[in-house]
Length: 572
Image 1: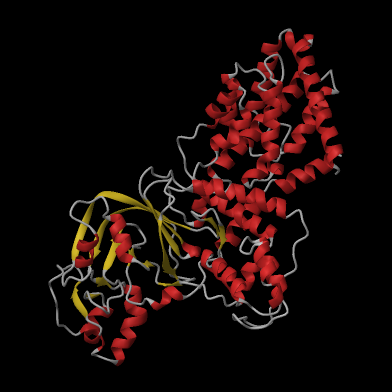
Image 2 (image 1 turned 60 degrees about the vertical axis):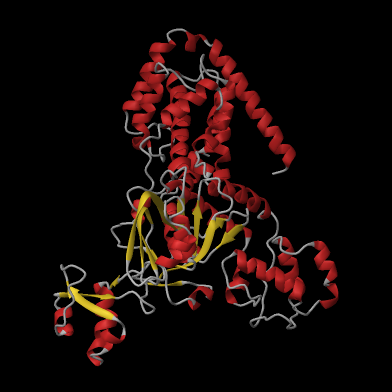
């Protein structure tokens, strides 16, 4: 639709609304006896199973809140009538129209349909009070639905085995928030007031606006490298690669001009740009363009928009973030961040290794770290014992000794070593196995403890080479950290008697040492394939566990947009 026509339509609509409000304020049928008649009409709607308008919206879910809203307004119309405000009505409808700014679909709140309802009122001066009440309540219902969706998400995360603390905010009073903005005529501020205030959410919201603008243009063709491209090699697609890197902000126009002579050679400047991109995305920054780097370069604006919307939904599920320190692991990014405060722009960051796809995935969690253990024992889980160690022990009776593994009674103290026949007792659960501290211990030199149902923790590892891999979903569920000493220094930073030197001593000492934290540190493991770094750059990661597909499917199942479109079509 041409811009001029859109502008004319909007002017006509708001002129119609103005006329409507003037008529409602002066109409005798509304003025005389309006209180009793409207109260009766609204009460009838509230006591029914579903209002006659917006049959496809979840009225029962918001029935109680609608009752509170209208009782707080003396059971009179909220949006039209003698007490109505043109500013409030205009802003309320505009808020629903702009739902896309937060990654939501305006059709789910019948934004266009509601505009038509109120526009029709302006040209129907004999509208009865029952219809007025229906229109008024339909707008209130849509706004309450929107408020809950933008504040804590459309989908219940507990359907994806998230902890009970996710997707719940018992303190959120949607009616109070809505009524306050109505009274103060500040409904245009409603989205910013109820949406998450985190840095991550705001950055993703800005990125969404940027990519929505980009998506209006013709998408670029995919780069088609027929084989892995190494620095210094020749390839006919190099000019296209450079243009793509310029679009991504990794090559400037001046740099492009300087390397024009080497059109088909993979030169140093282009290699450096690719390495920066790889570094930002958590890939091995070697400048080699393989399958993963090529997929990253070919990611389209619409694909990025879809990932950002899913990320925004998950951010709405998060528990309230602390004002102080916080450790965050984004599982598909294979990265950890340790923040001193929500405004910390110099967070400690490091690579991590997470659980394998399948039965040993790292879970989503929100817990409190309460202790560290230097030079820890590894209490071998039964699943690992049964699947990995017992088969080796059957073929080699010396395997336990060679791996520095000792056996203890299942409920005995740590110093109760036994020398019984291991195989039979282990199989029957009479003994448990643990690996002594040392170079062979898979927990390395420090273990970070935050009690949880899944018995997951973070730890050091003697296997350092795996941190150079692009995909690091390699563990049995626990999270291995690349720089354990720095993380220990962060965790113990406020604890008397601990500094870099004492931490190094503890990590090289002969005995296990447990340190209880005087103040716990919140730990968040979450999952987002779109993530804004502290450098304000957006990164996209592979959906290693298939969670994006699951969430998108759940959103599609609860999507009201298709129903509303069909309903509008049937209305003619």
